[in-house]
Image (cartoon, one colour):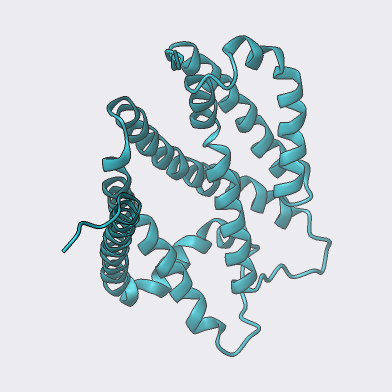
Length: 251
């Protein structure tokens, strides 16, 4: 039997390689899903307690006798489950990122591995820091300002589902904001932009920081400032770190 033509052999090899990558991706996704499910099952019993912990910044600022409400029949059951799922994802995130790393690492050069792994670690840590900053610093100040601004005779009672949506959006806003140093370092390391250029466009970044704060936070000056100022400071931190980072030489 004659040998297969080189073109057909190459196509078969490409197809086998693609299938192998799909199998590997499926294995990594399955392990990540199992890890998430295991953590969720472990936290299921404490779902209501987790929501109470999440709502503490608002509850502590409500007037005496104030409370949160549920306006939908299924809300008291499903909202705590959403919180438990969110907590499960955060707890399992390091393992999920490890599985992602194991999937992409074989296709990376050695110098790319040295860059990607620290960036993944720093990005994850900064995202958690952003969430912590929102929970421990921003929420108490913002909720205190909002509840104290309520007109006389108005009872402040927030729906638990709407509160969860607000908290998640703020977590995402601050978590992404805290990625600015990573983005700056990565752009400089790849040679897309120079540190000198970053310093040159500083005034525009300051303006953009306040625009972002106005878009992604409630319409009050306090919360806008508490997103805009850290965004600007993190940009400055990114410039400092990037100035210590060698630029990738493509030649």
